[in-house]
Amino acid sequence: MSATDRPGTKRVSRRSHHKSRLGCSNCKIRHMKCDENKPVCANCSKHSIECDFTVARHATTEPETSCGSTSSSLTATSRNRFRIYQRSVVQMRKKNQNTSEQKSPTYNSVGVQCNLSVSVSNHGISFADLHLFYHYVASTSRTLQDGTDDTNKWQLIIEQNLSYRPFLHLLLAFAALHLSRQRPESREEYVKQADDHYTLGIQHTTSEISGLDVESCQRVYLATVLICLVGFGRGLRPGEYLVFSDSGPGEWYKLLYGVKTTRESYRDNVFVGVLSPEVDLISKDISPELRDELLEHWDYLRRLQIWLSAQTPDESIRKLSQFAIQTLRHTFHEVYQHRSNAKGGVGLMHIILGWLYRLPQDFVSYIEQKSPFALVILANWAMLLKYMRSVWFMEGWDVHITSHIRKVVTAEFQAWAEWPLHHVQKRDE
Picture: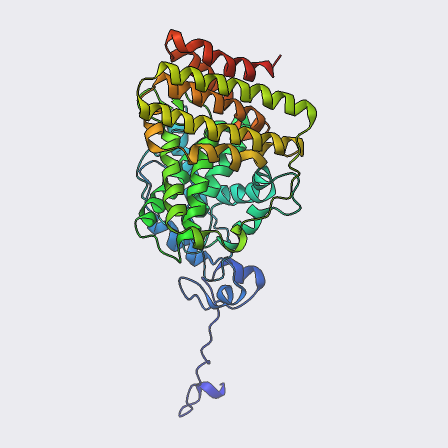
């Protein structure tokens, strides 16, 4: 008989311990004791890794989006790091089953399509979004870089704005559109991702514009710039011509309003730090061959201004036309200075789009109403877009705009609309 079986002997119980039988997979792999604390066990919290309990909790609480988006919304964690969450096998099988039951639609990037109700993960970013983010850092951001610069300003902008959710959504939308151009076989998938992120980004940015202040103005400004870039990245669409459309105002020009509102209200607070103005050290000289070409454009604009003044009895329209043509002459001169210094492509964007930005609203209204005098002047501006064809999101806009203007202006204006169209097509010969 053992000592524990003898009468009068007190049975000694085993000391309790925290051995885990239902611990997370990370602790099992590491052969560590898991305290099974939810939503994150102590070991996973200590090592800053994703815990199975968090994934399980997220999977049971994540609602479906109204558009069926597969991209997770982004948040910045307390440490501003990206973590990958993994879907369970059951979730993946269910997702594949639902996908196979539905006919795949044809996606075209059309901007804000619906109101998404996306569940935000406080701990992760989906594999799809991580792929987009990596592509932006490794590739897309370089397309925004002036080839003559040693540093990529947009890389610095990313580092400083990772915690701003609208900026991240718009950044991922832009990267998705870039991938849709590079991988046409997966275009529908990437365009769908771009539209989902664009919807979220523009919704958040619009709400912040109404409460703009000194602290938020720079990040909101950057978001509005990205909105305009995404507008270009969505590509050419029938009936849309940047400033005007078949139905009136152009959708892209509406996006420019956010940039103007932020810039004009908080200019001194926006252009600081990474956005501080830089001194342009390019030579003011223009090469002889480009000077002859510039003088040809100037002469055409001079003759157009004289003809419009003779044809237009309205003094206000004459003044608007004169202002638009004179500022366009200056824009041509600056573009040709940069071209003489081997600066083209994205390096011309602030110059060329700057002309649109500075147009009086009255003149823009005439463009939206498709007044022939305003459209002919706009066609001459669109000629400059051909010098940005090397930029993936600007390709084709020059011909798209000039050819349509040539088609819609009245007979007496068609000869003046022919010159810009001939000039942009001449490059293709």
